Length: 228
Image 1 (cartoon, one colour):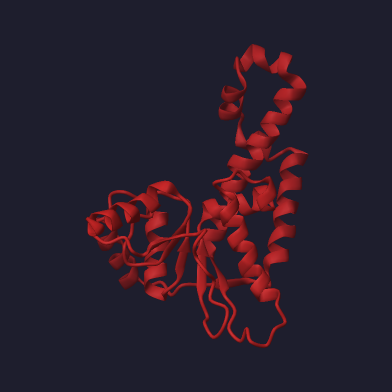
Image 2: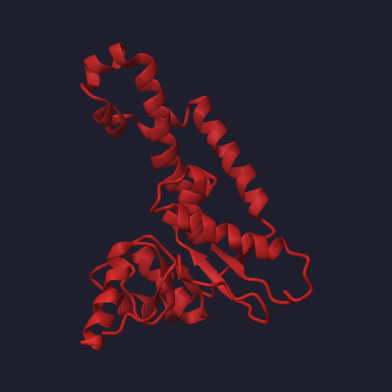
C-alpha cells in the first residue's frame, strides 16, 4: 500500500499561479484555528495548521493579478455542524468549567473531587443556559463572517444511489468513523485536498496534508523500505 499521497504540511508549497485548488480542513483543524486564533498561541504541533490556513487566506487577499485562480477553503453543511457542535460541547464548555473551578473550587470539590471529573460531569444543557455559551456562539458568528469571503460552501449532490455506494464502501474501512469516511469520499469524488490532524485518515487515494506523526510515519516507513 502506497502512502506517497501524504504530505508534510511544513514542506508543502501552496500553488500560486494558474491553479485552482480546493482544501478541506477537517473539524479538528478548524477547531484549532478558532480556539487559538494565531500560530503564536498554539502548541508547536498545531501551529503549522494555523500557518497554512493563514497562507491560504493571504493568497485570497492578494491583489496581484497573477493570482487568477485562488485556493478555496471547502465547507459542507455536515462539516460546519460538526465544527460548531464540537467547539461548543468540548472546547468552550471545558474553558467555562476550568474558569468555574478556579473561582468556586472549594464549593465544587466536595461534589466532584477534582477538576477533570467536574468537566466530564457538567451537563451541556446547563452550560447552554450560561452567558459564556451565548458569548461563544457570538464569537463563532463573528469568526465565520470574517472567513466568509474565503470559504467555498458546497452542497454535495446526494441520492439513494450515492447513499448505498457510500455505505457499501464504508464496510471495507474499519479504522474510521462514518463522518471521516464521508469526508474522504467527498475529497476523492471532487478532487479536494484534505488537511487533517486525525490519524483515522489512513487513505491512499486522496492528497493529505498533515503534521501528525502517525500519518507521516506511514509515508516515511514506505520511503525507507524502497530505499533499502
